[in-house]
Length: 130
Image 1: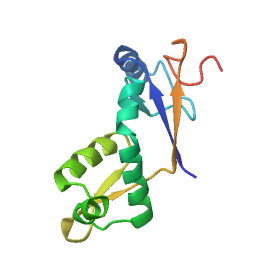
Image 2: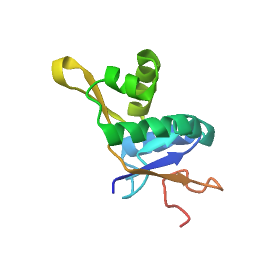
Image 3: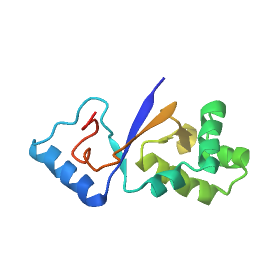
Image 4: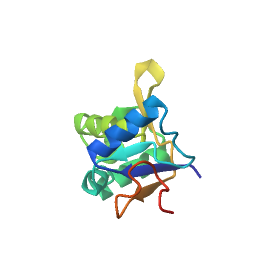
């Protein structure tokens, strides 16, 4: 089972962490989140029940195009395209070119693990304080 670890941190903390990694001051630990959201609300919106059903549909049916997926999901292609592009930015969906250049979506992970600091102590990396 493949798991994507997601972290929640304020933008300033994510920026400081990214800069520390770029400078070589911080090496991400194994299992540390590679994908970050600025709030639980933004994470919850992207993984709404509606969108989780979409991910399940993609994983189960393996549609060969966005048109086919839109028909299966009962969603407009433009709405679906926007949602999938956002999901792909967070690693929840992979988009690639298939037959005749058609865009094909796939789900690379079986589950998501959410890593949230309750005290802010884990701002420099996941696992702090554990």
